[in-house]
Image (tube, rainbow, N blue to C red; front, side, top):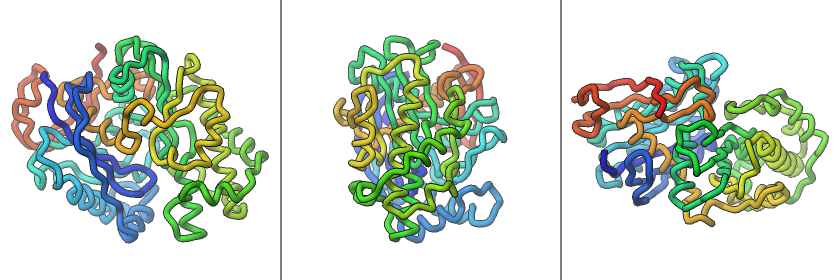
Length: 382
């Protein structure tokens, strides 16, 4: 299959808005990066999403949240030239892999009809159904990025969204090879700080780390939180956005709470690095957390060089949107989107649902699909 122009969209756990980015790829290598854009959720939209957090399909507020997600995506994606395929992540409202379920609000079928392009969506459910964590899913793209920028040694990508997640990459090995990828959620990232700012100041986030820099971290509470069994679990492993809601840190004065959460982020990343196969040559930081000077200063104390991902020429704001463009093409080619080292699934697995007419784009050897919707949920080692 030749490289095609894909469009990926990501609405993360920070609940700030939707990123969208074009990528030209064959699902294995990156040919070119294209246009990107962003739409911010309105206050009313953010409130609707926040009210639905932790809820499952059919529960109160979920249908409204799904409509918010779809409408925001339609506003943003309609501004792009029609792509050959769209990767639509949706908005994670609940994530419970131990219970065999995960919930990303938003229907790909509505987007496919409105935008006139095939949409790959519901990327996580098949992995969870097969016993995987369902997250993180960006590691396949991180591997391609490491090769694209010419990295010759092990490197790690740290995404600081609502939750932190780390991908350790050995770019000298093929993506699906044993030892090429290890990925897992490190712990809390922006979500508890964002929620703190919302509660106490009515602001979306701690701009420039100003609140955290006014406070003093409670190291005893940092150590107490890191005694949670999650941090000693062997990866792969994943977290729900609100896994740490109601901890004693939230009872501190706001500035001290923000400073303590920053210390938790750095300490959890340090713990995560100790669980990697070998120290990475660099830790490349992506996601909104890299824009918080208090967080970046705390990460500077780690035992590996730390830099924003822009130091390699990549776009830290759009990396996850680009990842879902990449994954959409992999689904069309029946290539794995998750691996034993990234989600703990038993075998490399291609997971996702496809809405809309893929025509000649989809040809896995079993006949092209000509409309409606199909599920991709098969294991395939390469």
